[in-house]
Every structure is written in C-alpha cells, then in structure tokens.
Amino acid sequence: MLNRSVRILLAGVPLGFSLLFAAEHTYSQQKAQFTSYLPLIALPRTAAIVNPHSREDSRMFFHQIYRSTEGIASGWTGSIDGCVAGELAPRYRQSLQDRVNYFRAMAGVPATIRFDSETSAQAQAAALMMSANGALSHAPPSTWRCYSAAGAEGAGRSNLFLGVHGPDAITGFMQDVGHSNDIVAHRRWILYPQTQQMGLGDVPATGAHQDAQALLVLDAHTWDARPATRDDFVAWPPAGYVPYPVVFARWSFAYPGADFSAATVGMRRDQAAIAVQQAAPRSGYGENTLVWMPVGMESGDAWPQPTADTVYTITIEHVLIDGMSRDFTYTVTVFDPA
Image 1 (spheres, rainbow, N blue to C red):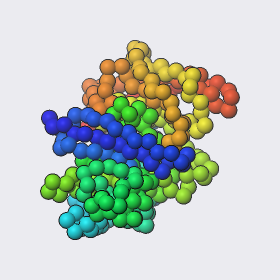
Image 2: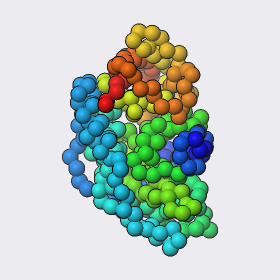
Image 3: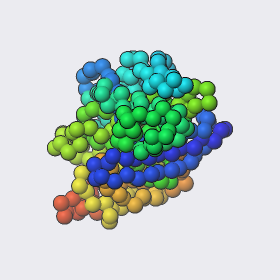
Image 4: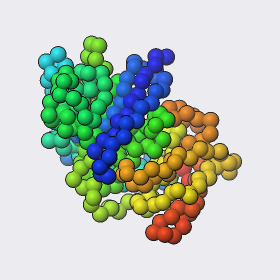
C-alpha cells in the first residue's frame, strides 16, 4: 500500500474563526491531501427521499443513488499548465450532487441541495490552485501558481481535498479521517439542515499534479430557521438500516444548541456492550455534535462487512437542551446491501 497524506482545513465558519486540521493515514492510493471549498453548477432535481427504517428501501436507495454516482467521466476542460480552471461535464456534476443528497436523505435532513454556478466557478478556481501548488490553504498567497481572486474567495469558504476527487472525496468528507478531525466538522457541514445550495470544484490528477476537490458548504441560508427533519437529532450513521460501506469508525449525534459537556454514550451490538472513546465536543461547525468511536478502531478503518444484519443500540444520556437533561436511544442496523 502507498502512503497518502490527508490534510483538512476548515475556514469561513459562521462563528468567524478558522482551524487547520492535519492528519495522515495509509490508503491504497497516491500521496494526497484534503481540504474544504465552494460549489459548482447542477441540474434541478426533486428531493431525494428514503425510509431507512425499511431494509429494502435503504438497499435500493444505496444502489440507485450512491452506487450510480461511480465511474462517470469528469470531462474536465481545464489545464494546470495554462492555469485554466475549466468546466466539468453536467452528468459528472450531477453525480456528485446526488452523492451529497444521498447522505443528507439518509440522515433525515432536506436532500434538495443544488450546486450553484457562481460559487462553483470560485470553487473550480480554488481546486485548480490546490492541484497546481500541491498544497491546501484557505488563504492562498497571491504568489501561488494559478492564483486568482475568485479562487482565493472560494478557498476561504469551503472543504478542500487534495489527492482525491469525484464521489470518493464526498465520502471522504463524511468519513473525516485523522486525529485532528475528531469533531467531524466536514460531515457536520454536509449534513447541516439549513443548507440549500452547495458548490463543487473538481480537478483530476494530471502529470505530477494531484487531483483536488472543493465543496462549498456555507450558503446564504446558514442562519435561517431550522427546517423540519426526520428526527429532532441528526446522526451518522442514522437510525434504521444502513449499508456497511457508508458506516465509518466515527459515529456522531447532532442536536441544535445542545450542551454535550456532560453527555455519555452507550453502544451495544446485539446486546453486548462496546467500549467507546468520546471526542471532546466543540461547537462552531454546523450543529453541536457528539462524536465517538469504538475502542480498537482507527478513524480510517473500514467498517467490517457483516455476515448478517447487525443491530447497534445507541444510548446518549445527560444532554442539556434548554437547561433540561435529556436522554436519547435509537438503533442502527448495519447490513450488506449486496
């Protein structure tokens, strides 16, 4: 296996601060980096809807939406040598929009995300800079190769990935690998209920230059009233039947305005207790979120393929909401969608 370096940088968060996350993990791909950024154009679509409490609905949704986004040519028309950001094939852009909406629909938040053309142009320029310079920055200097004001604007507002592009990068943001990503900030923004528009910039690997992706996750609706969601919380993996390829080592539970400082997580597999390690909660990235991981797993580990449907019961206690302590219990059934 080849080592791939993954770097994540979050900027432009609503609270007005930025953090640099750096992490390394071993992948069976080339050396890569990863960050945040802006959106790109998309075709209008109706809302993605799924009932994850139905095994068959979840299985079909996985194959019809998630799997269908794979293997589509990007059709990139740009050039690093000429510092041309270029454009992407409409079908390719649509496939990445669909993958974002797959995760949102499964999580029970509005899955009507559309890639905006204006911010996507900024995102595309940002992705070009990341690939051209082999580095990630939300504040790229004007001395950078292929620097542009549009790209700098985009770089300051989004999730950036260097070394991976396409649908794998969207899934990578959801997985949030690395010790500095224990608050799963990228996942939190992808699943933020208020968001209505995102954008995409995507550059394939060319010659010695790594591929890059920029996903805009902050739009004009950040401070809107929270829309209706399937549950009053947003969890990943969500309650119900979840295909094992989209179950990651880090599990998360979000609730708007919740105080998780005294909260505890209990996790059971078919009634057998599983020891977990909780991450210290941090606000400022989407909704307040509690994150944990089974002891013995690393953040980049793939979830084991189950030989039979496996039920996990999650109990979260001592969550302070509006000054009152609340407890939550839900079940996740991990299954093989083959």
